[in-house]
Amino acid sequence: MSGEFAIEARGLSKHFGAVRAVDRLDLKVPKGQIYGFLGPNGSGKSTTIRMLCGLLLPTEGSATVLDTEIPGDSRALKPRIGYMTQKFSLFGDMTIFENLRFIAEIYSFPSPDRASRIDELLQQYNLGPQRDQLAATLSGGQKQRVALACAVLHRPELLLLDEPTSAVDPQSRRDFWAGLFELANAGTTILVSTHYMDEAERCHRLAILDHGVKVADGTPDDLQKNTGMHIVEVLADDPYRAQAALSTISRIASVTQLGIRLRVLISTTVDDPLRLVDRALRAQDMQARVQLMPATLEDVFVAVTMTPQERAA
Image (cartoon, rainbow, N blue to C red; front, side, top):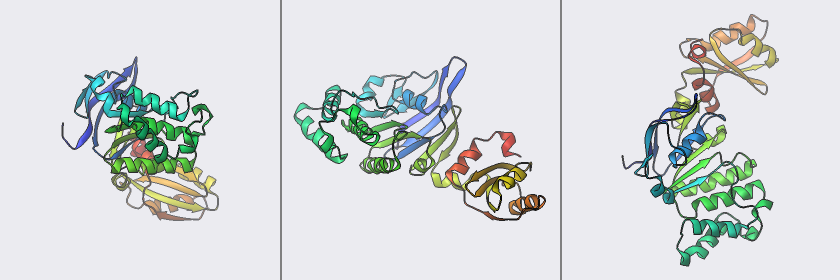
């Protein structure tokens, strides 16, 4: 395995009966970076993470995680990784301190250093005032911070996070990501799944999954520059009527309303997308301002999850 990658997957697949939850996934996650999995529920993100940490055996393919083969000796891998699930999985009838102490015992963290390490985490994640509070009584953001503190207590080389911010408020999400960047800057590799576009933009690199298949992989900037689509923004007095008119044009791949604006995706094989949109609206006696715009990650996601027929419209 190349020394620059923490994870390298080759044709990784997982089938549940006739369902291909993950289908021939190839993946390379550089060390010390935050790598994102972007995709809707059911796209294979959680299944992939569970295979990479040894909780699920792949149906086909293999992976090398921190120089350990999967499937293989996953027991040797577990002390070197941290895993945070989407659902809060700590003990609600135990205090924050008791949960951290229990995790320290599970990982056989050196006894003389446990108290100082727990105190360090309580301070780092702003949990000192809640030290003796039962976990079940914490807010969503506090539970998230406790779960992250538990996941990193043993100072793992690789942190696997399965939609960790799905149940918290925007401020808690921002604070959580600030903590992830601190970990990455200190050398921890982080693989995080999400369905939030703004979170995906924060990743150094990301893969987009659709029905178990990786449909895109790259830096957010590269993905946005290579959608294969013209992005046309339309400002019309009646955006709903304008959307209905544009949706009938065969060479328009997608039309989405965002407030008073329309986001129109047209294949780059079309030479003059602004003229196409303008003529379609004028044919319905509508005037609008149309302009080319840079792609967002949402545009990328829409583009790469289209069927071949939709992309070639």
